[in-house]
Length: 358
Image (tube, rainbow, N blue to C red; front, side, top):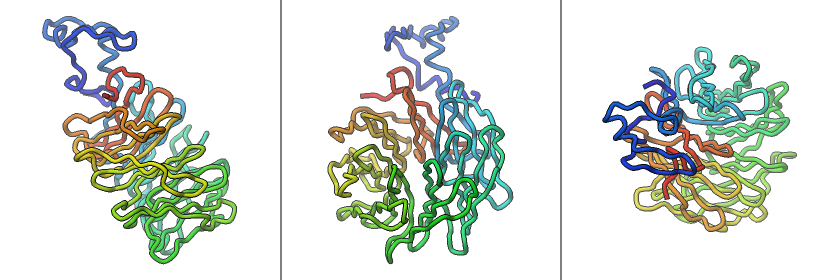
């Protein structure tokens, strides 16, 4: 199958089914009889996954704009794949120079994609969307190693580093030069997640228990800190809305913590069922938080914000393992998998196929 086609085994149904106006007429029976698929049957099959070429392995991060999803791959050298949303096929590819290895973090603005790389010292590559070529590069100082997370606003890119203590570098977009740096206190190590709003950057630390640091943008100093309870370890993902920060934890079972921005205190917690372990990715919209789990097969949990209870679940097919990246638009959630080759699954949030199951 080519990179734009979802496996038939995950989609075939034995009945006539009306799904939000799409009548899916007994696809298994039609194929068995050698009949051509109807337009609505083809909608159920085509365009719901991207699969990398040979050696395009391990999608560690995703971001998106109106027309494209950008997937950061854990290759040497690193790659960023520009994927057309409409077809889920490769539109263009950025490939790093020798030594520019393993894209662990990715973000974007109107004109550029920013790729955070794993070398020592760390690099952040500014990639022109129109050409998918390098526009400029930030390189860390000695000891500023391994970029694990990125976020951005109108003027700056913020890079979270896997150092001891952790660092968050504020990089001026126009020059790709360091503007300011936040450095954690002793024991505040390994920034694995970032989110931002108008006035603050939030840094998720890979600690036991986990911490989320609220950093004032204008000064790059700590404003407040959330610290997990005993057993609430390893913050791998952050997202935020007007009132809350949501922290995905690498616990067994997984947890998503909903904390007040104003006080950085826990308000509510989602806890996974049974073997729903290790939240490695997180995103959100107006009403839901989506948690990507590091499982085989992978799962994406759709969580109602108001109650922090699971609303629906997408479970991957056999071999669709280890969700490392999530992003979303009005109609779809995109899940990046740590497979060989890499996969990006397009999940229909309007209850067409493949979709979240309640």
